[in-house]
Each structure stands twice: as C-alpha cells, then as structure tokens.
Amino acid sequence: MSNKENFNSKKNKMPEIIELSDDEMNNYDEIRELEMKRLHYRKNIDKDWFSKYTWLESEENNQEILIFCKLCRNRNGTSKFSKGTNVFRLDKIKKHSNTNEHKESELMLLNSYQTESNRDNTEQSDKKKSIIPLIMNNYFCSKHNIPLNVYSNLCNLVTLQTGNNISDKISTLKPASLEKPSKPKSKYGSYKSPIAACDFLDSIASVIKNSLFEELNSSPYWSIMIDEANSIDGNKHLAIVGKYIANNMPIMRYLGLIDLESTDSEHIYNKIKLFCISNEISYQNVIHFGSDGASNMTGYKSGVAARFKKMNPFISSNHCVSHRLHLAGEDASDEVIYFQKYEKTLRALYGYFSRSHKRQNILKLMQVINYFPNY
Image (cartoon, rainbow, N blue to C red; front, top):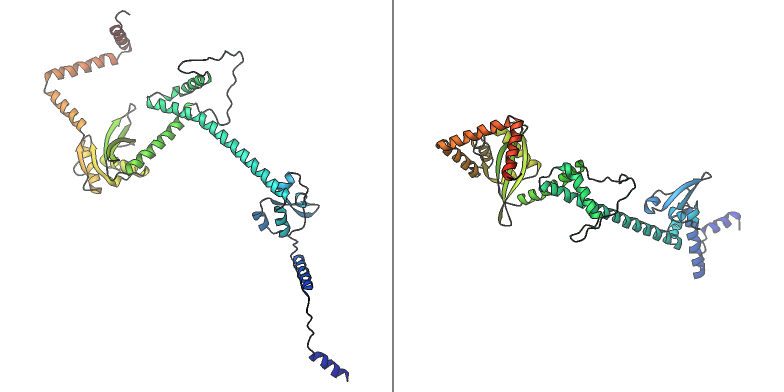
C-alpha cells in the first residue's frame, strides 16, 4: 500500500469512542471544576462585593492590594481575612462569612449597637424629664397672664423644690454649702431663659392651633366673627373668632389676631382670606358673618359681608348683639340728663388725676385709707 492510500484510509477512519467508568467521570468533573475556578481567579476586586458585604474592605500593603474583614481585624482575629489576603474570589468571601470567628465578630458588634441604643434612649428619657417641667412652667405663665421675665425664677423655684424633696407634709432642706457655686454646665443648655420660654410658647401654640384648625375643618360649615382693636402704640389689629359644630355640639373658639395696615373693606377681606389660606382653613365653607356693624363691615356694595356674599350668596350676616346693646345704651343716655352729667363728671375726674403724678399718689393714698381705716 502506497503512502497516499495509507493517508486516505486514516482520514476516512472514524474516531474511536472511549467509555469512562463512574469513578473516572467523577474525577473528570472535579478536574473540570478546578479548571473553571482557576479561570475565575481575579486580578482586580469586584466593587459590588463592598456593597453586598459591608464588613469587607481593601488596603494597599507593599504595593499589593489586599482585602480583609474589618470586624475580625478589630478583634485581632487569626484568619486570613483578618490579616488580609490577595485572593479575590467570591467563594472565599462567602466561606469567611460562615466561619465562627466572623459570626462572633458580628454578634459583638450587634451587642455594642444595642448597648449604645439603650444609652441613647436613657439620655433622651432624662432630657424629656427635664424639659417637661419647663414647658409646664411656660404654660402656667401663659395661662395666668404672667410675664415671661419671671420664667427663669419660676424654673429655679421648681428645681429648688424638687431638690429639697418638698411635699405636703415634710420639707427637708439641704445644709448650706460653703463652696463657691459653679455655673451649671449643660451640653444642650438649660432652656430657662425668656428666649427659650418664647420658643416653648410658640411650640405649644402651634400644637393647639393645628388641633383647633383640624377640628374646625371637620365641620361642614362654620361662621366667622371679627372686630377691630387698637393697641397702646396705635397699631390696628383684627380679632377673628370662629363658631362651628364638633360632635353635634356648637363650639366657639378664638382663631387669631391679624395686623392691619388699613381699615378699608378690601384690605380686611384680603387679610381674612390670607389668614385662612396660610392656616389651611376652608374659608369657602363660611356660612355666617358677624361684625360690629361699621360701614366697612356691613356696607351694601363693598363691605366685608358683601364680599363674602359674592363668594357664597347663601351667607347670612348680622350686627353683633353686644355692639347693638352698647349703641342702644349710648343713644338712651343722650336723652337722660342725669347720665349726661354723670359722664361729664367722670371725664373731668379722669382729666384731673391723669395730668399730675402728685395727684395720682394722693389718690392711691386715699384708696389705702378707705381700705384700711386704722392705717
């Protein structure tokens, strides 16, 4: 047989199929898996590992990048991930996360977080216990029309009573100390100044206002009553009172005080509307309007009541009964000579004493003598 024929016969010959045993197949799979793992050996770190495993960090040591577990390193662990390794493989990271050393590190970290959280809760509880009496003092001053200038002294009085364990039956006073009192140091301040009192007052008022306006908006309709007032310094204000239905009961509440630059009807109406919008009050549900009966309030064409009726033609309007009674009494007194002389005498007495400080002191002395004849 020639070489050419030998070559053609080898070419057309089918490859021989070799059958492997079960043990040889298992060894082949293991070898194949090891080869695949060698192929997945990384030279660079996958950045997604750090977001998935928050305890994993990297560092550079002798111009070599290492990855390590910061939890185990903080505990001076002995594993490779505690000291740092340059094997960037995900299966090694997963394997370390299941080791006893790493689980103990995570457990210690969790216990430290819980201890810190309990300490923070205790500090917050102590702060609340110290702040609540201050807010109560502030509310007491506001409720009884006491100026906030005495707020600091009132807080010190309450602190003194608490420190001395003052009760209804027994009062135990602490002995006097010869040491120079040091100024109290507080990380967040004492909150006993008049400025802090104003902040407390604003916070209390905001809570009351929110609950009040929420209750008012729950009523399907409500009525509004307004009246102008002048302060001592001559500034003009507008008091607003609302009446509504809550739990099938009519309720009347003071809503607020508005500063006025002018007393014309358009300005007053716009101020009322702005007040309702800023406080999220449904002014479209106003069904009744009450005022003192002045022309800018009850004017037929351009009064405040007329402007409300343009918004809702079903709104009713009336002249305040108290103002009517006052006007009726004033008109009736003009027809009685005795009341005319009475009013004239009162005005003269006021003018006589108001123009002289010396006369005012004599008037006070006369009041003392009348109250205490044996003085």
